[in-house]
Length: 251
Image: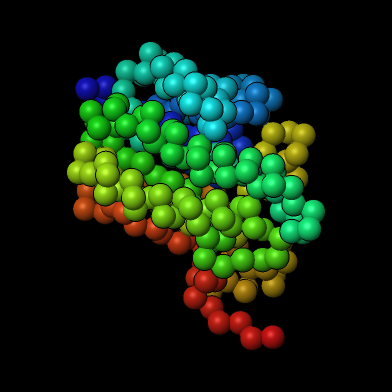
């Protein structure tokens, strides 16, 4: 078997996905990033360095044909698949009165249906390698701010889909999800949109952990769940939010 394991990260050209890709590349992983933002992919091609190989592939995760082409290219280059990180997501956060049904459906198509499509098409090579699926859920699956109906609904679906997949694909494939809270990746974007958000002391102190999260906090959990030593963990959701969802707030 190839001494380097292979990971697919959807939506991995920016944000949390990009931080996870960087972390895996430094830890004997080859990484195929499937992303629909060709501009971000192009910038990553010029930037990427690590002891593993990086492969950027255009992919619309809501389209089964696009996903199949991306998988074929990944297997042609790396020969195997050990980890699928379903990270690609969009949002349409706006007042309900302004939210178009078509916008709601598009968010569901990418965030939820895309997770199913990628898992379905990657099932065979993942089974062959006793692989792992990690779905990016969100604390928004369990609590909300106003005007997040589409995103919250999609992530609630990802939470339920995760345990359903774990039962259906086990024991060969383990499936878990991660629910990030406030993770600051404002500067981890393509050059046109990368702007470091100014965080206040209050922003940090409201978290029981004492700070706003960073992408590396999520990458650490991805590496933990992908480790074969943790083969008894499946069907679970892990909240990485600095303790915020356990903090009672009265106004």
